[in-house]
Length: 350
Image (cartoon, rainbow, N blue to C red; front, side):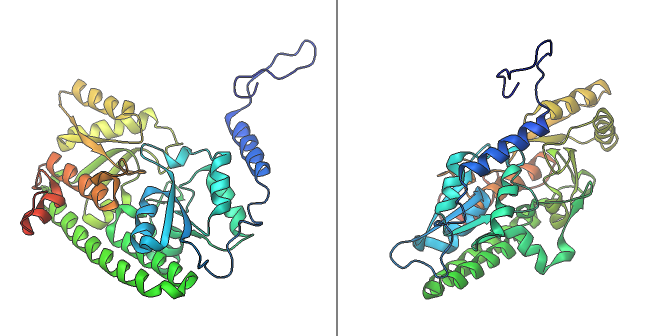
């Protein structure tokens, strides 16, 4: 049986569903066959086209935000994975492969954040230029900052604004090298956005530091906030591992419930791309032990908010997360976050 459809079997033999890992392998193989010419006529030329804007594909909205900020009107950016999409479980479509074929430049995160798409990109990167795993390229220049958990590399670099500024620098360098005739514009836009992100980084440091020290414990649905914790001084625990493809064990849940009760923590957090089932199990476990814990808010982890909204931008995503965390754990942060703070300092309405 494949995808619920019966497959012919010999006489007297029952049909059984393919194991999930074999089904995924079959799907990936079929997708690769559908667009065998990805490295052909659609491969990046040696120089940037001059008769049209560059076509760039970013696998995630966080990367798309950086590419759009630096590229400005010179670069048309397509984001593959939108709001609410879990990149760890993403299954590429034929339309995705066509989009990749038509791109001049492709920006992925790397460290297998992109699930099955990562295998396609790794294979094509050996056959054509213009494919960049940005997080991996950043860490190649500063290997001491790589975070590892459960034996794997943590792909969630954007949770540390300082590291994401390094990703901005890397994207600027890629665009300048590929399209040197427009270098001045890329450099000007990157410099302006870099200053904005530095101010955002300072805000996150400030509001997280306002949380009482014994409450600087962040418990979320999966281990996406490790870089955030290391950068801003919080202990971080995820119910699931680095990838949402992992399973939460009963012992893991019990240990987290015990930690919540022992530390008298007031809140835990859900994520916009994941079910809240495991988080609610923590609440019930703490309640059984006579300790009330609430959901402090919904955090953006592997995807941003809706395009056209504040949380549909990288600064909005991080501002939201830091503000929600600080306020839920007893810290001091404006209700409207960094956006409100900036508007007040400029005499504007947020």
